Length: 526
Image (spheres, rainbow, N blue to C red):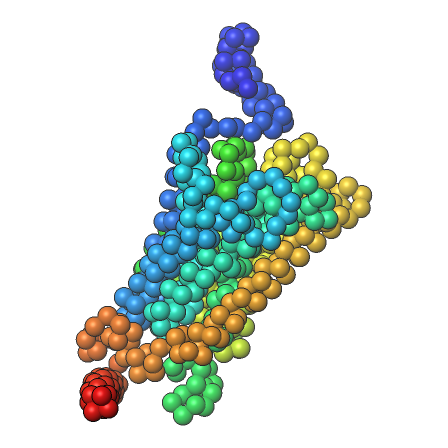
């Protein structure tokens, strides 16, 4: 494609500034209409850059979790965020990427990838594209796993985090990613005979990342149970109002929110780049603008809707900072699935509805006595599910033309299809089926997985350990340094620890005596 500036200069349109500007605008418009995809000489720098932006979101998750828990659980919570990434990296290296994109080439539809285990097929790639693409996809898988971390904070065992992060990134998430994003997945839009002639569109992962992680969090928190004293008193009687466990630092939560918002530009904008290095600049720009608008609108709606409700119920208006921050994240999760294929006004509508859905889901969890320490389920599950559905409603002809590279897309969003004279629900139907598939697959694997962890005593922390704080039992913190801990709690925990150690030593000594007696018996027999 000829450079627009060079074209205008070479053809004599430079005799005054207004003529030159008009020529440049015409050339840019023409190149957009032709929808010429840009191929970077080497996509590696761009891929690595956006991958690091997505990976930096882990710092945002860690800050939100650290700020949302009580001071006696900060070390434990942040370490679990780190374990999510570490365990996920090994799992995605060994089998996760293979199950996701191991057969990422033309061929028959498959349920799961079957090649490139341990990245062995990338050894001969001298361009670096394959390795950079792995890094980009790993950052997405790790994000899905980390969603669960905050939900289970303050009462989950350390080993459980490592187990589920490896299971999620190594098997559960890859099957979803393969079905929707792989060129051989049954929901993919680019296969020879896509579902309903359309296929599912999940631009950057409202379903693949956020619904997968959010529904896993819902299953886990249901089986794990609430924190001590959250819904029931010491006698096991239901409290009239759930007890609030405010986090120790709103500042850390705000820092984490801004880090996540920053990382989301790489998350959504970077998804316009395919594994071959092709991308449309208009799609990238549209994705980041829509992400900004949806997140902003959702925060405003969540903040002021809660303000109005609170004022009507109590007579005292309160600006709830947590609802504003989480509302923003819900809007970002919702726009992730459609950010490159909808118009900016649609992004504002999607964000507004996401804010209301977040508030409704957050209050619903309290009514159901489900304890989500950071409101990750309303943010990612409710926001992500709405994002999947919204794509089928608001995907515009212009957005899809740029995204697919065709002049007149056959299937568009349901609302836009009415402008063609007849409703077209093909894309909307694919979105619904895709959402059902994600929820069904996650339930099929993760429900029995967490049931088994709970059965073998590997899921929930000991009650006294939870009361004095997991930083005490897991990290050697002095109980007296913990907040919200009474001297009675400390004494009870100390007695339990001594009894446990004494029993362990007695049991070990008894086994040694039994071994000696067995040896003496053998000697006498001989």
